[in-house]
Image (tube, rainbow, N blue to C red; front, top):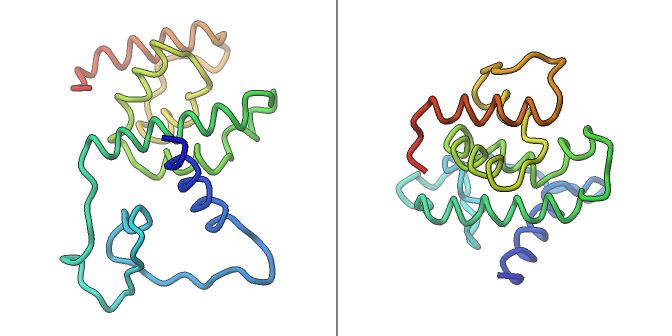
Length: 149
């Protein structure tokens, strides 16, 4: 598992590295192509792209969550936590991760509010809610959605 986290970390460092040697990005027909060791160009068809299974995506989600928690655990600045590359990568996974985030809220409450709102546009609690009230409101909302986790 640590090797996988290191590979994801290297991938994010390469993707989010800013400087004079920023690589040029090409259009890729497969949004999951970054997960593979191979690089696809826009001339290759989507039939050659690899699609991850749900279990692979859930494993990736869990690894990104661990990376995000580890690298932002000492930060009290919410904006830093929300702009972390692992958090952004989770958002890029789309609404498929919503039930997994709700599951995380139940077992290890954390600042998932921005991700949940961005992915669902739901507002189950007022902005004045405390952390605990917001957690409970999102859990109640998630339970009402009948997700298959």
